[in-house]
Length: 438
Ligand code: NDP
Image (cartoon, rainbow, N blue to C red):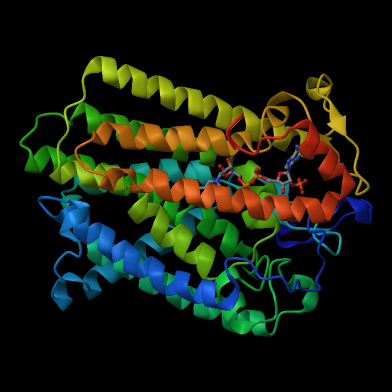
């Protein structure tokens, strides 16, 4: 392995440029409703996952048919499925370790160090496609994923719980400089939010790996399995237009995330939150098994989409994508090099930390233009499922709650970090996500 990658480099930049402004000392104001809140979330999320998947399998997935009948134990757990899941995880870990792709530095940590990350997520996607293609060619049946979907989701949930316990145990001995700004010192809260910011085994960064690989690439494979299941169960020679739209839209989202992998390094997940149950469950379970919900729904509940309707949905998706991508790229380019001549036309506000804030361009439109783009895309993913049931719109509703809450968290961090400069930004850009509404 590249020896450069194994080292942690010490930055010469001034302390004022550090990303994690809250140093190793831990904050006491707990988010997510504190200990009772995170306990509720940790119990509620797996229950919600099971309920949604069981409801979606019903012939009539109306919210009035709640709760769905409880399945037998063998419909919930299968050791072979767990074995397949472990193989999948190990294959992704192997791809992550391949010495291909650029090595870049992350944002400065509280103690001034910068970690190195290898960017080979897109390569992992290509290799995975080759492996899945070869497996299907040699007779593997992806219908197995659809037929055992709940067992796969529960296998991933069990794995993420085991991983969270491992992370909590190893974090108990972590030095103060390794702790996440979001950690609190409370064992239950930290089990949820993650105590260590960047847990690594050698050069293997557990959080960075889980953020983009097993779950995100897994989501694409799940969607493909649903597309094939739809063709089989509905006796179709080709997938429906609705299924094609859902698959293409979400594939674009994943390809975009992997192609722009470096942008992950400036997100809250990497710079602020630790690695604990929240991200382990989110990345490994919620993303592949809930974000694929529309495709799962369409297998059992076909919906014919007309071409005029499809054109409107595609326009919505593209509109959301342009806002999302351009806003994220603009902020990322600015954070990487504020003196970039391509950004010279943008107005900024100076802050006492040394990092400036963009106040024109996308970030002068609303304070979180990237969230707006993401929400428009989420709506475009659900619309191909039609208006027969509310269930496929669960994702839009959940994602709105997530991003509104996330925006509030980020706002608190930024206000603490930038003080008066942030107040000034809020006065100049009064809306958070949706102009004139919120
Ligand atoms: P952002 O990428 O929006 O990052 C927020 C940070 O950006 C702030 O903490 C601040 O950090 C910086 N910032 C804020 N305002 C300005 C400004 N005016 N000028 C310059 N910098 C500014 O947040 P997230 O990490 O939440 O989201 C990243 C992307 O991931 C988004 O597109 C989001 O939609 C998406 N996402 C998707 C999820 C999913 O499940 N699909 C879940 C969560 C997020 P600093 O000043 O320290 O640089």
